[in-house]
Figure (cartoon, helix red, strand yellow):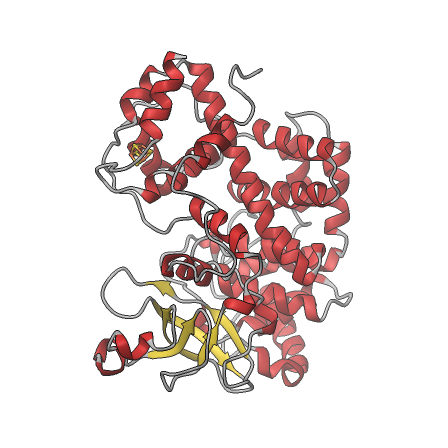
Amino acid sequence: MTSPLPKNLYAAWRGQRFGIGELREDDPPPERLLQAVWLHQRITRDHLVLTDGRPVRVLHPGFPNCESGPDFRDALVQFGGDAPKRGDVEIDLAPSGWRTHHHDVNPAFRSVVLHVIWDGTGASGLPTLALKARLDAPVGELTEWFSSEGSARASALAGQCCGPLRELPRDHLQGILDQAALVRLSLKAAQLAARARQCGWEQSLWEGLFSALGYKHNIWPMRRLAELAGTVREPLPAELWQARLAGWSGLLPAELPRGRGADGNYLRRLWDAWWRERARFGEVILPRAAWRMSGLRPANQPLRRLALAAHWLAAGDLPVRLERWFFHETSAESLPGALLALLQPPADEFWSWHWTLNSPRLKKAQPLLGEARLTDLAVNVVLPWLWARADAGRNRSFQAIAEARLLAWPASEDNAAFRLARERLFAGAVPRGLFFRAASQQGLLQIVRDFCAHSNALCEGCHFPELVRRLAVN
Ligand code: SF4
């Protein structure tokens, strides 16, 4: 469908918000940007050094704290060769913030294990990390990224744009959502490209894929395992990769789980393989506390996801096959099926029949990769990665292929974020058929991040309704 809208209309709308890009490289950034940098780890994670010279690894950045107290709760960090440490993280622009904000005498800050600052030397008596020289992209680029990844959450109230959006002709509405989806694609691509500048394209793909397999709760430990796999890339069969990833994850039980017949044999082989490697990798094993296990669907259990990743690692040629899919698969209808065939491993002796190490054998084999996760991988990692590579090679026609694929991709499974966004922008009255494609969902999420996340439940200061109103009368 040809859109009646000017090509970069949505991008121009974004530019009219809150002075994107006004920050100069020498200015200290706003603290909210620093918090977003920490939350999304937009830093050179492989080379972090404390102000006292010790290396530090961030195993998990923690969870944003919306109440009083430190900025992040329950982070996991490792200083030098010490055991990983669990605790809170406080972010201040200046080292002196620790005392001037009275954190030093506030009991709510007793569990802080890391003080993160913009620049300077430690003054809190705590391990201190200065971010200024550790960003993964220039401050201007991060400001642009932050403007679309704001951390505020919209309330469930219908917004002031509901009325203007209802008046908008259908093709205009579709065009705005598509353009917003393409903006989102480019932002995700920029993040993968920034990581690729540190570790190479292939590794940035692996980290993206692993993170996506971590779904909402286990993104960081999954990403850490991808980082580890990148340090010891060697040809191994899938089962040995499964043993290694399971061992690194810290999720292997301390005792051999009970299992009979073929199931028991698999568990024993997994254990034996890992115990042979344990001494070599003892220092990198993640603590179990790095994982969130409660509330996970059976299919999202980390060890099952890692079993899938192990098959990809064992195959050894995933990036090449993705490129082949990108260049040779031309029919929009067969795109998802062809990608699924590429990413779906052969039947797994154990994991096709079990949700967890301890669960009973399923009556029917279950694929390691389902259609919902496939779409998440496609729109969040595979297409942005291919787009980023085309961008790095200044190949506009390949970028256009990636964009066309996103626009043709069928919708992903509904979830709470989509529901909340529809509530805000359409008050539940969504035009029929509007969200049959993933691009419409992605565009909707982008509008929420660009506009709702910078406003409040009353939509104060939001320009979006006015922009839509103006478009409707033109
Ligand atoms: S903040 Fe803006 S975009 Fe979000 S619901 Fe309100 S008016 Fe709509």
